[in-house]
Image 1 (cartoon, one colour):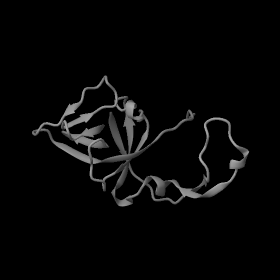
Image 2: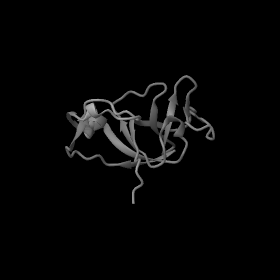
Image 3: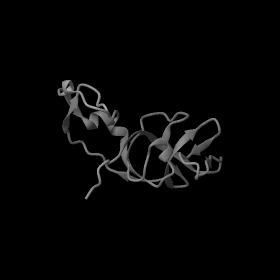
Image 4: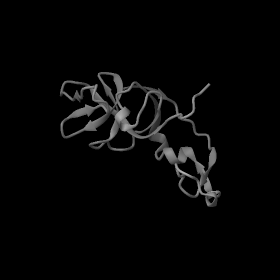
Length: 141
């Protein structure tokens, strides 16, 4: 899965956050209240100086819920750990994969794609840990 980088903004836009969870079945009329405003940037970005956005491209991470066109929130302040979804630069090309430190691999979330072995002679840079993905659910016209 390839990624393209996007520049974050610092605009403060608070949006109402409902005080209860949203049921996917029949809604309760008693849930018609707002708990507090939510700044989506504050929710998604914990380390602003070390965070960037990337756009996912391809289908290699669909098994982990990341689809082509999704916006990825990537935190460079986090130490990559085994099992993290990461943005990695391999020989200069960005990719989004799961870090497998036990096997020294980058794994796809789609069985059609083989794992990428992390050879000692390959130039690998972990650019950051993917902490969120954002997807449009309505067709943009």
